[in-house]
Structure formats: C-alpha cells, structure tokens
Image (tube, rainbow, N blue to C red; front, side):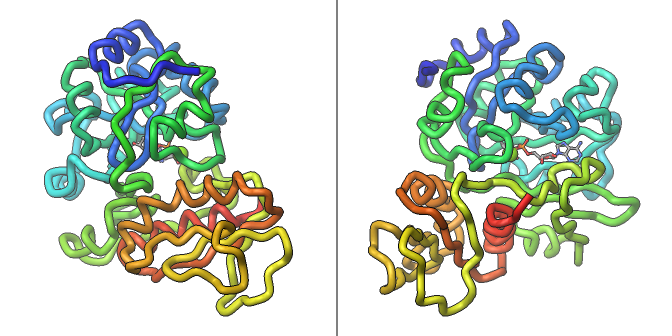
Length: 316
Ligand code: TXA
Ligand code: MG
C-alpha cells in the first residue's frame, strides 16, 4: 500500500524524480505526474490502465503559469478562467510544443485546470512544471473522493498519496472549449452550465458518444461499478432479491435500509454530488447482483450527476 500523508515537500521530490502520486483536488483525487516528463506521464497511463487515446488534464496554480504551456487563450476562455478558477473548470487551449504529445494523445489542444484545494495549490506553487492528472481510479471505474479510495484501488502501484480530506465537490470538473466559434461543454461537471451561460449565453453541450476517441472524455460507459447497474424507472416497487438502490432523497420501503444509499435527504444537489461516488462504492461492495440508480432533478450540478448515473448504467 502507498504511504498516505500531508508532506508537500516529499510530494514535490517524488514528482521531480518522475514518480506518480495521489493528489487531492476539490473535485476528485488525481493521479499526478510531471506533465513535461513523458516517462512520468507514461507511468500515469500504465498505473491507471488507461488507453493512450484518452488525453490528460494538466493542473497549475495560476493563470500566469497557464500562459507558459499554451500558445494563446481565446478571450472568452480567459474570462471563464478569471471568473471560475481556481475551481471545477477545465478549458481546452492550443498547446505549446513543450507539452508532450502523450499528454494530449496527439491532439493540438491541451486541457488545463486550476484546482481549488489549498494543498493542491500549495504544491503546484512549489513546482515549475504542471501536473498531468487524471482521476485516480482504474480506467472506467468510479472516481475517488478520499485518499483511502485511492489507496484501495491504486495503492500498490504508487509510492505516496497526499491526504487532503474528502473532496468538496465530488464530481469531476466541467470541460469547456471552442468547437469552431461555438463555446462548448465537452463534459458536464462541478461547475454548473447555468453559471457559464449567465456570462456567455447559451452554450452547446456535447452528450456522450459510444467510444469515439475523436471526442475524448466522452466514453459512454464510465464511472461503472462492477455490479449490474440499471437506471430506475419511476415508481418501481418490485425489486429482485439481491438488489441495492441509490436514490436522491427518499428511502424505498421495499428494500432493507442497509441496501440503500440516499444522496441527500435535504434534496440538496451539491450534497448529492459530493456523496455520489461514495454511494456507488458502498453499494458496489454489498452482496447484491443489481444496483438501481434513481436520477436526480436535471438542473445545476444535477445535470452532471445524471450524466454520471447514465454512464454508470451504460452498457459497453
Ligand atoms: O476534476 C477533474 O477534472 C479531475 C481532477 C483530478 O482534476 N480530473 C479528471 O481527469 O477528471 P480525467 O482524466 O479522469 O478526465 C479528463 C477528461 C478525459 O475524459 C479526457 O478525455 C478529457 O478530459 N480531455 C483531456 N484532454 C483533452 C483534450 N485535449 N481534448 C479533449 N478532451 C480532453
Ligand atoms: Mg476520470
């Protein structure tokens, strides 16, 4: 198992020597490596068992530093960064040659994000390179929202996990870029689309595709537990014997309480987002065959929650 701790200096030294570590952010934990070191980046793909066509986000601590890694920042994306960073926002920008092709899977744009987590920001400020960091889960599985989750899944493959507590947001960042001259959301996430639209008017939202590497980040089946997963039709009362249920705010009277996980009894979508992956993990560890998922109200961060629920239930 990996060592879990809060030693930023140790983290810095490991990263400088090309190691991969667990990194807390406000969205989910990342699996971080020096983005400018292709060997370290290759290790990230290997540890995660991630296909090479799925590019990585680079993380840094200031807009000034972002300019070191990209050719240009279109005005609207700069405004977005100024308004919502640090925060659960990732923007796609034309990369400089210094960013290895491995990071972007050969694409000309690099995904950049400034995370809002004090430990991550402090560490990033100590580094003169950005950190490439996908979510710290094996490819296709549920993203981690605590150091323990990272340790359970990848602890045997990495030397160190920085412990920054439970993630506040609990869902990955919202990814935004230009598709031609249209501002486009490529992945729904922790930054509500409504907030972006309040500044820029209606934006396009890409829905997930089946397995199209040309639209990375959009793999349909993702965030998936090991069990059979079904989206629940409204008003289901007959459950098979070995069934578990993830619901928004109310327990079902048709299943034992311990086979259920409620996201937010107060019907608070932010709370629901922060508990989503923990809930999926909890239910996945039960002795059940099928996990039913109830969709949440499709507004604000609820849109990102529903996106993850649908992907968890998607076949293939
Ligand atoms: O909140 C987050 O974004 C977390 C934390 C650790 O920062 N990171 C994260 O990384 O979710 P990952 O690798 O699990 O998801 C990043 C997504 C991928 O689906 C990838 O396809 C997409 O971003 N992506 C990365 N670079 C891209 C690029 N240049 N163009 C299009 N999509 C890109
Ligand atoms: Mg991920």
